Length: 413
Image 1: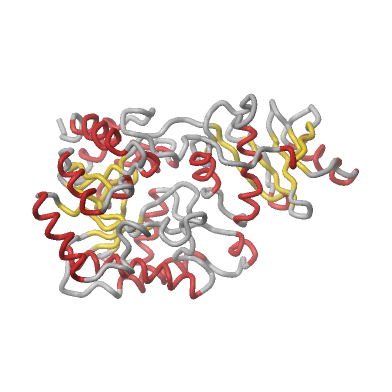
Image 2 (image 1 turned 180 degrees about the vertical axis):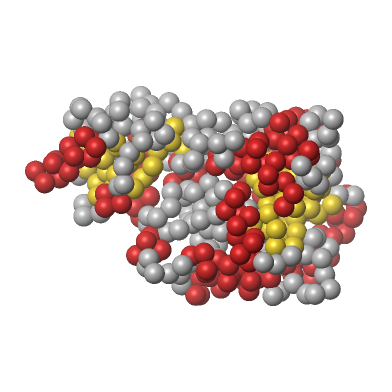
């Protein structure tokens, strides 16, 4: 059976204790306690602070469902970094330390679950191909598990996420088998499954017996756009995704798209680049030349699309943040930031074309009722926390609307 919870990561405009009260007033049985630099920072929390949190939980009569160790914790502009598979030992140890702090907070508050994500393959992994990110990740998790005492009931959870090294539920289960600890289990995010699994309800059913916890949000179909280096182009499937090819020698980009082949650059291509552009378009089956867009003419300021573009770009693996941030004005151009939109739908970098952008339950196209049925029918029993960090400004409506929609479908028939 799924019990409803709400993550404080969607309530970061509130003081932390007030966020707990807000979740309880809205009717939720549980609350996810999510680390946050300014609201619930484990580096600033003493025993008295945690005792005050526990007292507020008791007073509100709400269960602390999980401690989330906040992939966005360290550097706001580069979330998920450093990760448990970062090549630099110091970076990995920073993330390991954060997860261990999550275990200590869970211990003090009587919470049984602590969750985290794997992180992404970045450009460093491409450069150092001999390093095995899977081994680094498994070793980092084993180090985190050493923090759990033999006599306590705390379980670490891996949350697969679109674009990450651990992206699918099957990959999450394979990692759990590789680590081989009874204190390491699966955290299912239903939105992530919708983004990553062609048959997401079937995948939820298969994973349900191994899962201890859920994240819940809605999502909708978008426009898939890959970003790849020119020397890493293996082929094109334009039915699945358009591709933005990055040329590292000049930091220019070619949009390989049936309707809008475009070359974004500071100057016109030389003959060698023109031949390469023509070859890439021919490889993709495009028989029209690429238009030229002066990169310097693109709008690069703030816009209402910032949340969408930021969330999209950080999900693209294998490239440096400088490459991704230079692509920002191009994505904004495609989405119509200062003119007609060439891509009408939100951009996505997922296996299914569903946008990894957390919508209020009931406002997207995810079949949450079928998802809940699949989980309940295959043995899931635990909390499902609504995670709506894209709706912090409208937190009260997100909190209330989510509960109203989910409460009607949470109980099995």
